[in-house]
Length: 161
Image (cartoon, rainbow, N blue to C red; front, side, top):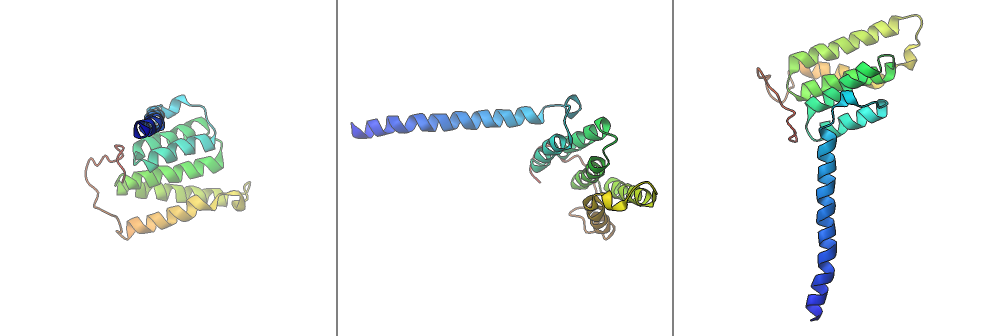
């Protein structure tokens, strides 16, 4: 009798945990199905959604979050520089090395232009996207890529990678 009583006491927490797991999975799935262009978030909100997608290996969705941010906040220099870097990085992770190389190079050119402007203090620019872009560009140009670029490589289908 005591064993049955103990079992019945254990079933309720186990059932609650299983239900919680199902709910959390459902919430995560719903978030990944939201179109980032339909959201109205600040840099932190968009980057959080993009980071969650990227952490799940869904680089295409992460790029959509960053592109949506660029579209909705064209005047935010800080966010735009970081979003541009992240788009280039996700493109690299999709094994689209030529496109990633161009995006990293474009971002570095943008830094050169911004640093050459007389109305902007270069110290106001976030250094992270520039430093990371220089590193990634060197890595691509040295040929230190994990696999050769394949025509039509898609990646980002939601599997970890």
